[in-house]
Length: 189
Image (cartoon, rainbow, N blue to C red; front, side, top):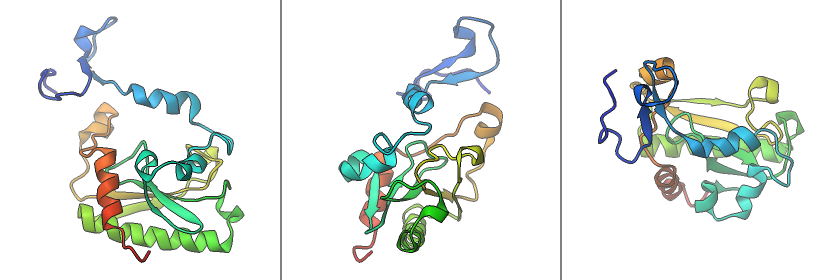
């Protein structure tokens, strides 16, 4: 990798390792201080501090909600794997799929199908990863509130960043993606 060029990532706080205190290494640092709240406080909230319980109480823009149903809603992941990474959540604070009602399960499925169509339309993605991590041991970041991931994938979205640098490059801002998906969401859904 070439040395960091100051105007290469305009507005993105990065530092070359040679300029840091300590032992220089070959890594550059991409600073993401906004993730500290998630790291320190975001693991397993109760229903009074749960971000998925609080999101519907806020405006769609604030909470990144793109669509609301009767039993469930769709919002952007605040810490996405890819641009357009959506979550489908029931309004009710339940932890696992087997605790959800048949109505919640049906609407989660319906919203997932609509989300796939909308994301495919607006982002021209080539495929999706869809899944639920049930329980903290299974990798759920917020294990106390059921949520399904919908991650768009593109044929050319793999690069060396995640493997070599442990970094994911996201080409779009969350607010822009939320607006584009919300505007494309069918009115009848």
